[in-house]
Image (cartoon, rainbow, N blue to C red; front, side, top):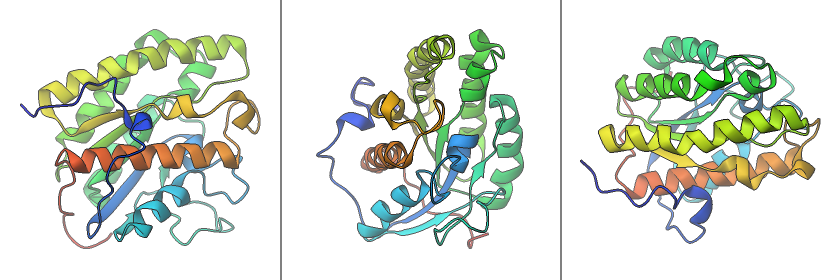
Length: 236
């Protein structure tokens, strides 16, 4: 079993983590509308911020997924596995279709908002997230899975469910990390405030920038732990 830093030291709290360079990062952004970039003015969500941060360090970056951003998205790489309106289970179904085609070596996971705002089995959401993570870890090739908490919500009832779900995510991740490694918790929801929301649910551009930086820190930490595998095959 790999030695892990304490789970409480999550990506958000690693501002001095040493970056890496010369690697290929084939990233599957996985989730629902926040992953897709809804309410982002340039329709890129956090993906462009994450891409550019890794590229500036001297890495080759390729976003992959079967649901590209709309044509008027301004960023050069539009690929994503973000599905607006989907709950965890439906995102997991899309992931299982996408993984054999796209072969990422990194997956950034932010999912569960629709379960919470729609009151869809919120008590069972952590277990369903755990199954999604298990499936990601079991697919070849080896994939670093960076799992985020959810941003807050301006609706107090929905936000209460989000807080309960977020509190469970570190334990879900820790259980898998202890058993398999290759998965890390990034508390990206914590770096988004209510003032960083465009419509009460989706981040505005500033909120997305915070999420992109948080995922970047998580990937840097995962690489430090030896969890960035070579990509498998040519780009899809």
